[in-house]
Length: 147
Image 1 (tube, rainbow, N blue to C red):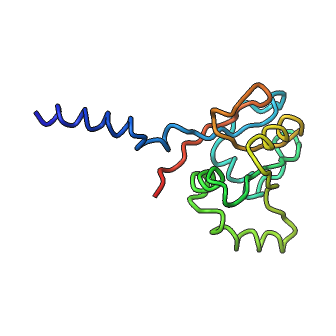
Image 2 (cartoon, rainbow, N blue to C red):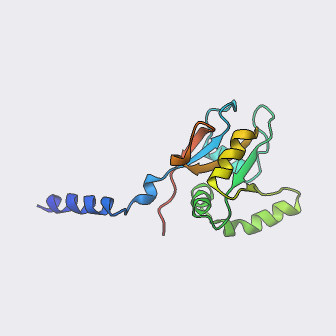
């Protein structure tokens, strides 16, 4: 009897958008002709922390971010570092003092797609639904549910 009540309630929650966050994975993208075909989450962390500045072939990584207030950037930071962008300020202040700049900030997902498609070594993230033939997906990241 209880199962008869649970299934309709789950269906209602799904249709109401309750798990909408889970339906929108983030795609980490690079140019289609880039020799790399996949990337681990740990490698991505190193690239975005600017601890790994070159790939295995000696090509310089150019990591891209959205503005710190963009919801997609916040999802990406939480999924990758378990921190929000503003919680990384101290890290970047220290890195900047040591001559290491943070990832380049782009205004939009479209700007990321265009830059990645035309710049060797560029790597960025967009919603999976925004991926098109201009780029290649290296990794899919499921963001954390919102608080």
